[in-house]
Length: 157
Image (cartoon, rainbow, N blue to C red; front, top):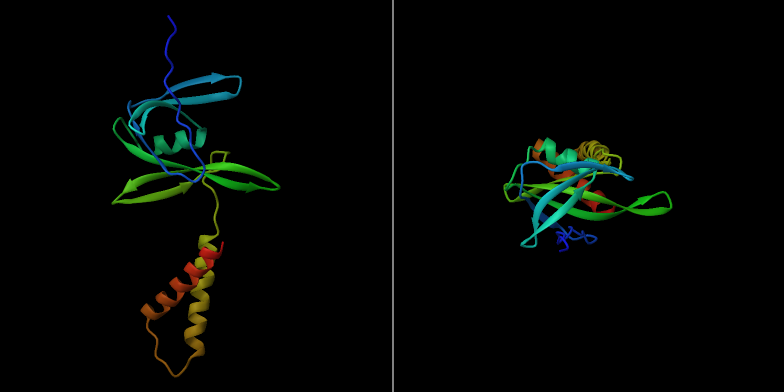
């Protein structure tokens, strides 16, 4: 009699998928493609197999997830030179919000320019308030101007 295989988690592009771990540990193995991490998860109210990449496995371990813990994966398109590849975004539920941790295929967290954009926005917010000498600005005004600049710049990206 043929053994029935559990379906695998298939991630559609730009669709958040919530997975719940069914076991505390994954099955680690190796094949012709290298090391793999097989997790038993619940996805769309069905028990499925999820083969995690090295970087996603690291995020699960670092987050100290155990049986019953949930997390969200979103497959995103990413530009790599002239090629379009995919990256998996890992998120944990925290106070009703998800902490976004985009990852690259090499096991590191994807780099973004948010720190540089925020620094530039803050410097320009200070310049704006200094340029208008007939109005008294407080720190809260600088914060609001900085936030507006930051949001506008990051939405364009």
